[in-house]
Amino acid sequence: MRRILTLLSALAVPAAMAVAVPAPAAALDPTKGYSGICTGADALTGVTVVIDFQELDGNGGVAAPTITRCSPNANPGTQRTGVKALQDAGIAVTGTAQWGLGFICRLENRPSSTEAIPRQSNPNYHEACVVTPPAEAYWSYWHASGAGTTWTYSSYGALNRNVIPGGFEGWSFSLNKTATTNPPPGVTPRNPAVNPSSPTVGLSVNDLDRRINLGQSTSLTWTSTNSTSVTAHAVSPATGGGSWSGALAVPGGTRTITPTARGTYTYTVRATGTGGTVYSTATLTVQ
Image (cartoon, rainbow, N blue to C red; front, side, top):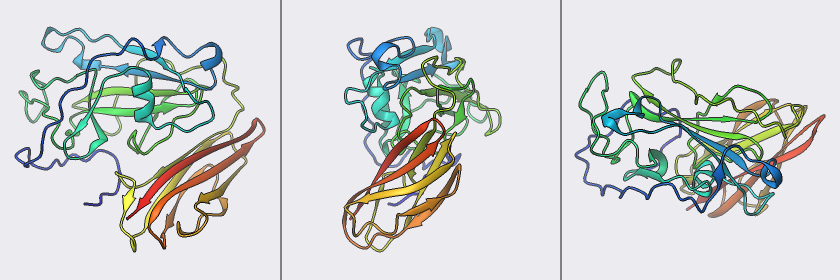
């Protein structure tokens, strides 16, 4: 089943769907990452992960203070998804049975399957992690470049988005909020090591599982900051992946692509500004 990736839908498939429920991931792994924002050699290569439990803190008597943790990149210069950054920080991540890690259901085993989440429409709701979590109670996903002080809500899942080196990845539990009142993480996403004029760029495939059938089309979306030009830099392999070349809109936009052969393709976008040139990639499988 192919599904276009948008903001989390308020409509979930009935929980009676016959799919296996994923087992909860283990708790925080202290051998990965470290507490606080990324510093030293990790300051411009790692990414800082923030987990703000919001109303889950103290729910059912379970304390859950905000986590701020550096996620180092073991191979600086290579791309990492938001999910990989969570894992590299030692954060326990659980997806749904329906979509896997395409939709994050639990972080650090919260919300657990046994705690009641007081949704307005269902005050005794329990998250089973079978299908897409409801819009009334889900982990909202945010990001920041590290150069400023504000968070940006991500319209794309963490499995579809590459992190910004030196930047921040934020997760904030949203309970009974709307698209305009979702709370950003309560930590200022500022990295003193980041040059405020440095450009950033991100590229995402607009399919939940980054997989389509031959003959179908999908789209790539790019976003950038502090850029004067953005270019569809390359696709690898060079043939079969569809048209991906030339100048792109600044600071961002979307382009439809139609691959002509089966395979796994890596698309690269380049952004240039007064502070330098940066790249980002996204991968699509055509079956």
